[in-house]
Length: 235
Length: 337
Image (cartoon, rainbow over all chains, first blue to last red; front, top):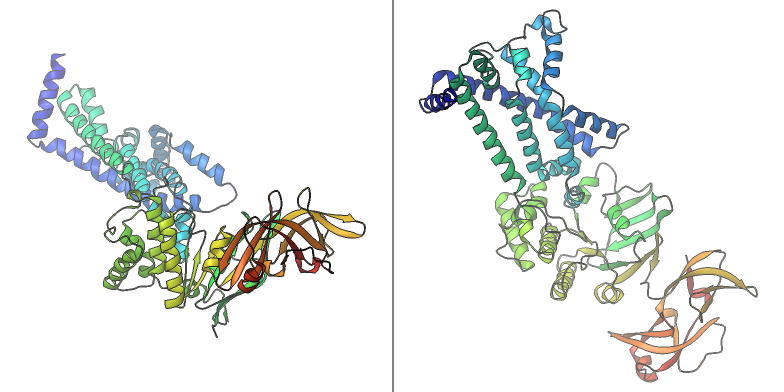
């Protein structure tokens, strides 16, 4: 076990000495995850709102599909992405495979159903009286719809943060579509896998600590949002 | 003469398989207070939603200040009205933002919004509550914030759906005063729903009732239901073991009967006349109101008949509680629905 203790000590030394390799990888991870989450939210939030707010044929079936996609393994997304982005694939001509954009696309596909499904649930959870109240105060249909989004804002932030947490910690997509190229597509999770394979525990542990720290921060934020008491007193 | 600000003609809305709201004509004037009464499920909230342009009727039209409301002016007309719901909903933002919401939609300047909101809060006795969140308010306080939020808009028509349901006696008095004040001072047409018939008469200039989706003038004081039966060529509705009311009309089966209190005669002796309905009973309530007196008489267990008489008649007859009297009315004055 001495090598593990040695690895942990070295890992802290690397973090507190702001080791270039550690922070380069951590920063790339953050950049890619934030970008993919924002893109997924850009499509997922409006779609989730429309699904929740409108009645149409097949609505329940569509919600089941999105809920099923919540548990889609990252390697399946990696496999699908690979088949589209590889030279022989439909989008092969764009030359995106093993670039940061490939990771962003894959992670976006991963976060999209999570954000959409949680957004549906968030909008459905808004009190039915909110829209009517807005109308009685003179809102047009768009302003009344905006009130629903505004009333579900904490649940929507939670949905986006949950999506971010999922993509930040995934490894399958990044490995299969990014290729773990140093300085280009190597992020925290692929680096940990790679360094562990080489027997270099210090860098792996340092990155693992950063990963856990970010995950912890995200959960603290989520908890704060979930406990924010701003709603109506029904008692 | 007060002007009709809002009217509805030939409204029909079917919103349940077995329920249809049908309003031939109803009209509301500036500066007057209207009470809308009726049993649960009679369509009161639905009618308010239609008049407030939130729900669309299948047929019929709404006229605001003499102009029919259509797609082109519906939002502008809706912004001249406001509504306070029975179980008021406050947005999850501080009280001040709740109150300024409608003003913001009307593009009022920020300073003006805040000034008006502070005044509105003062009016409902909630000064200093500006920064509180809805979760920090009691249900009564929430209702008062909702009232301030609606009144700050200075609506020309104000709808209140069961506004007194969730507030205590002290605040009921405050709200009644507020309603009278906005109606008198701002010439607002106020339309409120209530189950309290005495409150309806005390507060309003006119009482309208809804029974099974149809409008009836007056309150539902003498409202009875039963099956129409044929008794020796006469149509009767048995409303209690002892009381059967003679009616006229073509209707068959289940019926609702409404008898206007002003059509009921109170007498010490039984009247022998053309009136087909005469029942003896005991006076249970005497409600004095300006020059009129409402006399409520128990004619059978659980059956109360109310008559509206002048104060002069009341004094002349020396009516008192627990006194035996006769209540008489004609079959032709009964509204059969």
